[in-house]
Length: 155
Image (cartoon, rainbow, N blue to C red; front, top):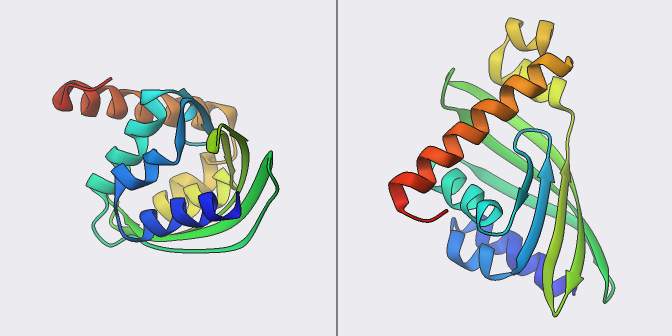
């Protein structure tokens, strides 16, 4: 299943959202600190949204390992955070569970406080480690995803 993870991130590097989501099972469950928990088409649409909005994103992935049931990888995303124009290097650890040859569970873990300091500067340094900030960010990303899905007619 290592080739599934490598294919997923290679498609990500190539900014090919449809290829990326082709590695996801229809019943995919995705979790990360920014978007929270997403299921099915919402998880797929998150990648479509992120790739459509990314201008200068570069991605490196490494430490890919997998067996028939589970996998993991590390990936670094380099990009400019559009709301502030600040450069971000987000270091992310991913865990996967497979079903029917596809990813059915994808968990991305990263330090939200570190991300917030880079993306938001002083405000992120002060608030980025709080539950309040995480809830507010999850609300914003949820609204952004819903708007994208409404505009695209897929949700």
